[in-house]
Structures are given as structure tokens and as C-alpha cells.
Image (cartoon, rainbow, N blue to C red; front, side, top):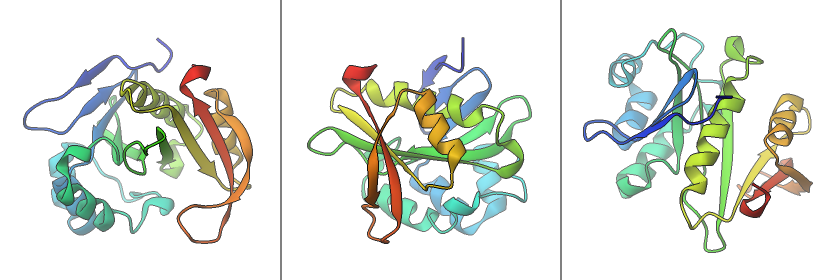
Length: 191
């Protein structure tokens, strides 16, 4: 199997998990997000994984308090935020991927991903995103998925194109930072 989802597991004591050929993705819950923000040792214990000094990737710094608040407000949204990416072979946290909340009224979800520098260019982001796409498409509310990236992040652009996303143009990001982003879309009808 080429990085496809092998299993979806929802254990009572743990948040949602996805297993792919080489990875395990663990959906953040409020407890994991808060530990990621405040206590690296407790975070590693909760994940039951090695967390290196290079965690988190630069783009993810400062997001964990926000995630903890969102997940405390509505624990049922776990899965629609961050998933921690663990390399199964070494049981090491190598990145994160996920969504910016659940489906909108018109069926849109936004996806993002980040892999620690030393694990980049080995297909891990592709494998993780492919697993998350399968998970998202299993929800009947999802009609299309949007990915945004910066002009200089060629690897992100190539990943989205490889997974079937279509470039739809440049835009000011919807998070209000005024940064110009490249937008890609993948519609359910394209899969």
C-alpha cells in the first residue's frame, strides 16, 4: 500500500488514531495540546513517543494554547484540528498535520502540515496528508479541501499537486495576517 490508511482506531483511553504504512497519527485533544504548550516531558509521556529537541516545527510554534482552548470548548472537534505524526519504526514525533476546524456550511475544510527538518523529503508529509484526506472524506459534510502555502515553499506545492489538489490562485490568507498565499483545492468529485 502506498502510504494509504491501514486502520482507523478510536480507543476509549486515547484520542483518534490513524495508522499508515510508516506512521501513526494521533488526534490532539485538549490534554495533549495543553501539555504540548506547557510541559514537554508530560507531552512525550502522553504520546508515549520520543519528542526530539527539534519539536515543534517553526510554523507550529505558538499554536498549542489556541488548540487546547478550542478542544476544551468542544472536545468533539478532536480530529478537525492537529494530528501528531509519529514515525512508527522509531516511535518518534516527526511533525503535525491537520485541519483548521471542522467543515464549513459549504463543506470546506482547510488542511496544513509540517514535518521537522531532519525528516523532510522522505515522503512522510505525503503519507500523513493522504491518511488525513481519507479520514476527512469519510465525513459526508466535507465537499472540498483547501491547502494554502507560501510561494517559496515549493515542496508543499509539489505535495499538493501530487495528491491531486488544483492550484486556484493567489490570495490574502483568510487568517487576517495579510500574507499572500497560494491556494490549492481538492474537490470530492475529483477523487
